[in-house]
Structure formats: C-alpha cells, structure tokens
Image (cartoon, rainbow, N blue to C red; front, top):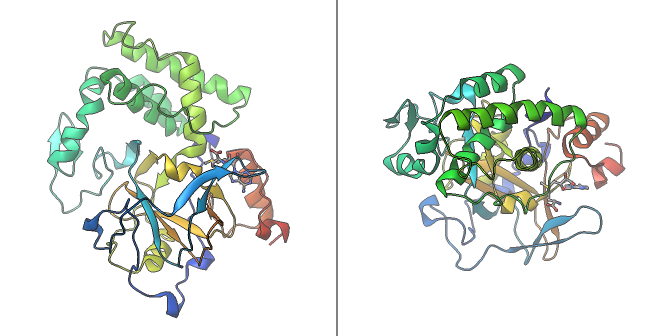
Length: 329
Ligand SMILES: C[S@@+](CC[C@H](N)C(=O)[O-])C[C@H]1O[C@@H](n2cnc3c(N)ncnc32)[C@H](O)[C@@H]1O
C-alpha cells in the first residue's frame, strides 16, 4: 500500500458489537448536531475540550461524563475530495451517494443538491479553467489520493474560499526524502497546470513547493477516509458504528478540524463515522468519565500487535503505547 494512501479510520472494532443493554435510541446530541438528525439537541458546546497530553501532543478530553453510545458532536469537513473511482456516483462536494437521488450536473460533475452545487463554486469555477490531465494521471499512476485534495484546496485559496494557512494548526507528518521527491513531481505538474490556465503569479503566489509539501504532510496524518454507513441518526448509534466497520469502500477523503485532535488507541473509547455524506459523527463506545481522554482508532483494530505497530509507526510516526499494546494483544 502506498504510504500516501494509508487510510485513517477504524474499519473493525470488536468492541462495536452492540450489547443488548446499549441498544437504546440516541439519548443525547451535542449542540454541534443538527436537529435534522432526529436527535434530541442539547444547547451549548460539545462536552469536550482540546488539551495537552504528556506524550501524544494535543488531545480531546471529556468535560463531563458521557454515556456509552452517545453522540459527542458532529463535524463539517473543511475540505473534501471524492475518489477518482467515485466521481460519477457521489456528490462532488459532500460525497453523498447519488444512486436514486437527484443529480445536479455542472460542467461534467454531479452534485446531490443545488446547495452543494452552489457551495462548490468556491473551487469549481477555478478548477474548470485548467487542464488537470497530467496531474490526475500522476495521481492515478501512483494511486495517490491526497494531491487531489491539495489541488482542490489550491482552487479554494485562489477564489478566497479558504486561506492558504487554514490547515497550519494541524500536526504535520515527518516525510522521508523519497516521499518528498515524489511529492515534488506532483507539485511541478500542479504548478504548470495553473500557469497554463493563465492564473497570474499573484494568484498562485501561495503555491510554493514548501506550502504544497506542508499541506500534504498535514493531510497525510489528518485526512479521514470516508466510508458511508447509510442510515439515519435516529437509529442506534452503536449499530451504525458497527455497520461502518463493514462499509462498501471509500467514497473519498476529507479533512476536519476538531476530529483531527483525537489521538489513537487500539482499544478506543470513541468512534468516528459517516451516515449519508462527509459530515462526521463522533460517538462514545463506552462510558467516559469527566476529564478522560477520548481516543479513536486510526487503523484496522483487528490486526495483531506487530502489524498495528508497523502501520502506526510508518503511517503516523508514533509508537503506540496504549493498554492493549502494552499487553501485546
Ligand atoms: C491526528 S493527530 C492527533 C492530534 C495530535 N496529537 C496533535 O497534537 O495535533 C495524530 C498524531 O498525534 C500523535 N498521536 C496520536 N495518537 C497517539 C498515541 N496513541 N501515542 C502517541 N502519539 C499519538 C501522533 O504524533 C500522530 O501522528
């Protein structure tokens, strides 16, 4: 698997098998969850804060007790990108599957709604001015997904929809020199495409090699692979989370702010999942006490100790020291 293609999500969590007494309807939804979710809405901020840990950088902590199976908060993506294989079947902006739903077509791509089509103007009016074939070929040949996200982000920056430093707060990966050299090939192709499309030096002044590499280093650690579960939030969350383990495959990738501060655990107490589109939902997998750190699993938790350690070290640059790893399980 390409290092750039490493997904950051949990596809299997043995703990997700819902226990009978946990099969209750959603009892709580943070203020970040919309009332359209069919959930009872609490007012006020979500019951979490971002703080520092001793050995794992920043982290998310519960500010009160949160019951098992509760929705902690929802999160809108800062940046989305459909996989190349999903281009005809998902909304170009929110990644919702288009099967059976309305399709809004705009200059060769599809949206699930007029709203998504309008919101995508924040990058698509720039994107349609360029010829991206060499850049897309490079991504397809190497099976790289993340450079396509940088392309979309670049278009958003040019149109003023996002600022060039919008992801600076996220932790960057440490990139090897071999990776940097592959990344630089992509940078050259992207730069050429913008220049051939007659964007001025001023328009693309932010698009330096350093910026491009820094964004990819952040996306590498913080992008989530989006596997849609389907269903609605009125359903039991633990069942929906379990369904996310057996998703059909990724529809694309997305970057978020708050979810990026969740650290990893091979036996996590929280889980991130997606229902109909790239709006993320964070939920607890067991009771969490006030002050406890909330952690999700970045990888396939069904793997053995050695495989997990290798993946976390190569993909995310850390050695996992969670209780499960300490017991070599
Ligand atoms: C998505 S970020 C999580 C937030 C991060 N701690 C921060 O300060 O932005 C992933 C990075 O956090 C650190 N991290 C996450 N889980 C960890 C763990 N269990 N042990 C050590 N470091 C961890 C690693 O540096 C990893 O690359």
